[in-house]
Length: 89
Image (cartoon, helix red, strand yellow):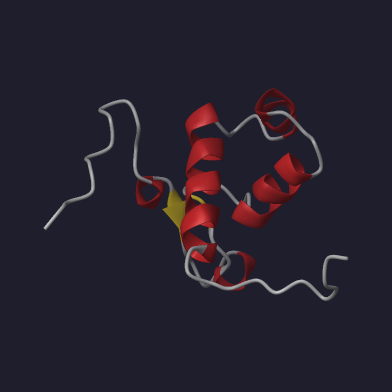
């Protein structure tokens, strides 16, 4: 039985930085200690913003927060099948 490798010492698990609080954004996952939703960070990356640009807009964030948001998003969609509306020609 193989085990997942432990994260590098400098690499935190997303669960160390992501919080779920029903009083903040109706329980939507946010970076712990902030009101910055994971969806805002992931959406900003998808829109082409760099981590530096996101941090400039949300100075309470650190680079590790952005990585944690992306790790959370990757884990959240793992196992979900996505079916496009159109078939490739």
